[in-house]
Length: 418
Image (cartoon, rainbow, N blue to C red; front, side):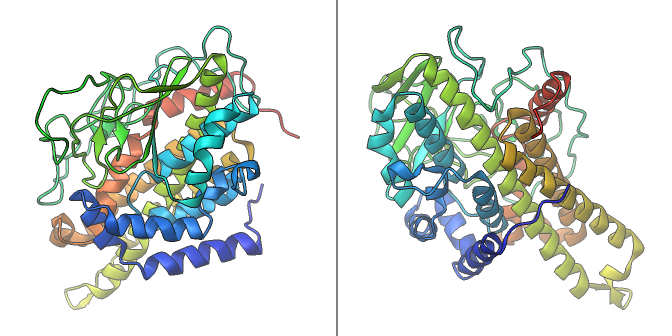
């Protein structure tokens, strides 16, 4: 099976690559991590003008979609340039609202989707940890029932290497698959904070508002639209708790406040949440692939310039083998990503996410080792991609959860082939 992008899709990717290469995204990422959203919002507006967010919005609501393949193409470039902000959450929110509209609840879509498509509004989204549909919820047309058995253990070898200086503690233990953990192992319904980090920024002193004890929203302090799915209810959160840093400082996490405006209720909300999860995982997988490609490209350039014993490091056979392994892993992830974008079946999307994220994470480890001491410095731009690869690996589903869903799809006979 071959997945080849057409000329328009290749040109779209090239235009985004050129635009982002000229935008100094590392500076925008560092500003975003410090709570300064102005550079990131300027970049967001340019992405919206290029039509990135409209790809997830139906034409009836001023979008051009839904076009998951084109969205995957765009998000590879967003990952390649480490674009900050709730980009995944915005397209997942758009998918949720679009599905609600298709199921007979057009009100929230009419109100919110045009702003998401135009880039005027940023959105964040929290889904329930348990995404099993409500008893009366019809199954999505492109979904299979998720496996309710505990997922298999994550056999990933713990990362015992040191984190970049000034950064965060490395991953030294395999994370439980269905627990709220630091952003180094976020639950699949959203994100969880680094519980050792002190709140940064936040709200004025005073009585603390009631906040959810469940999932955390990414960049809730920057988002104008904060959607929370709680069972069969969708609400618009009115605020959020203290902002906390994650392993990737540009991923700022906060619990949404409880209460807020009820936008929709009923079994259609649970169905739309499954659709949103598939889009979130697809976009995360595409981002991770882009992150891995950026790490690989920069590392190849670096080892070609660095010398030892009077010869380029790139001439050493061991270095060649490590880079070849990284290349193979990333290129094997690409057809899985495009195939998942074509089908949008949950098992296919889960398989693509685990493959792309694991490939990016392995590439990050290789890149860190081959860069040597400079790779451990937070001031070095490549550190932004190192931490992003680690955070994306477990955002919207740990490797164990995604493997379990992919295996559940296989045990159910797989999706029909036309």
